[in-house]
Every structure is written in C-alpha cells, then in structure tokens.
Image (cartoon, rainbow, N blue to C red; front, side, top):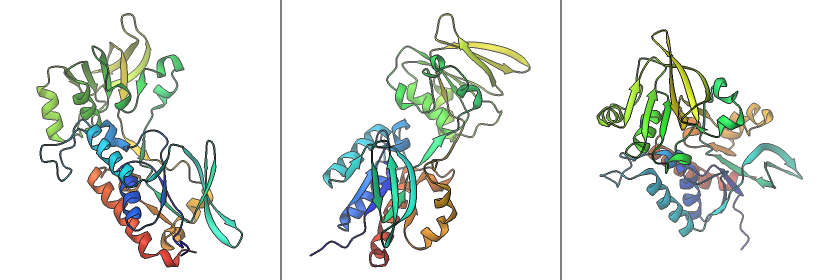
Length: 302
C-alpha cells in the first residue's frame, strides 16, 4: 500500500524537535530532523536539571541529552547534521511545498516543525573584537565545560549566568559581572553560587573593553561605582539573554505565517515560541503536541 503520509521536516534537535520526531515515528510518519551542531539544544549547557519528571534527584543536562539521543537511535530517526540556511514556501508542479536550503543540499517538505530554539544576544562590543580575542569569548558553556585551572568571567545576572558559574566552579575561578543591581536568576541557583568559594559576584558592572592581558589571554575593563576596574581572564562567557532563532525564515514565509499555521503546514515548538519559559519539560510537550496535530491533519495536507 502506498504511503500517503506527508513529508515532515523538523528544524532543531533540542527537546522539542526530538520529542516531535519520536512521536511522529510512533504514528508511522517519517520525519527528517535537521541539527546544525549537536543534539540537545540548551540542555547541553545545563549544570543539573532538577524539574524534569522522573529524576527526583536531578540529572546533569549532558546526561539527559545522552538519553534523548539513545531514544532517537532506538526509533531510527533520520538526523541530518546540517544548518538550515533558508526556508521558503514554493510552488512545485501542482503542489505547494517548503524548500529547505542547507550548506550542501536542498530538501522539500509538506510540513515543517520549527523547533530551532533561541540564539544568544551578542553585544556589539564583543562582536567588534578581533577574531584573536573572540575565540576565547563564548555565549554558551558547553564548549568550555571541561576546562580546568582557568579564570572565567561571566557577563550576566540571570539563570544562565549562575548556572554556567556552577557548571565551571570547583575546578576554575569564576567571576560574575552583572551590569544591573537586580539578579534575575532562580533563588536556588543564587544561594548555591553565594555558598561556593570559587564564585565571586559583582553587580552594577558595565563592561567597557576587552583587550590582551599580561598573565592571561584577556583583560576585561569594567566600570563600577564610577570607577574603572580591570580583571584578567582566560575566557569570557556572555549570558545576557536570548532571542528566537528564526533567521532562516524568508520574508515571504513571515508574511504568510499565520495562514500556514491555520492550514497545519507549519508548527512552532519549544523555546523558539516560549519567550522566557525555556524549560525542557515544556519544550517536550510542545514537540509532542505538534506531532499529534500533524497526525490528526494528515488527510488535509495536500
């Protein structure tokens, strides 16, 4: 019997995309999951996940990612490690389809699940630095999570900043510079950081410049109480917020987004649509819901 299921592509390999792919497999609907880097999304950065049901003692983010990967492999989900550079909605013969362009190939799909998550906000000051300095500046913790004996300056005052600090503490010297007086992090994280002798926290600190240091790679200049201060650092982590990762959407897609949503041709799942409610459990639920809606509307997609 000919398979009349739609061709579904999922953009993003975080909890939402993974959950959508697994649920679609359960409906016997094959999906291609596109991920530009590593599976796991922001879970790769999580020091420990304490609110995911089934793990009352908490579970390190990296360990939860491993379990997600195993689940994908068990269901033989087709994963392509390619960045989606552009998404269009085009006429192909008598049908309308999505055209996905990656660095190496072009793909067509009937339905798209946009589970592309968020990207970090990058201040102009840091982006204007020379490549020689930028290679020691990161916006997520997983690239440096194994470093030891280093000093790391973290810019930010939210959950990510304190979570990154706890992740790297114990084997590194951590300095958090919050540009505001208010801390926006979970009190539990703040309490743990304050009790950690390897973490120093300073508020009302605005970074002015980063240049070459003497003993360490970077020299960070910041102003506090109208006085310039300096600190040398091996690495800088910037955690000042995130924004939806939708740069691959063409203007033509954005113009008809609501129509595509109403027709069941595109779904948004996870952090890309959830604002500040960035939680793995919420993202998984979004992915599952998207897959269930796709299954319900299979016969309508033409």
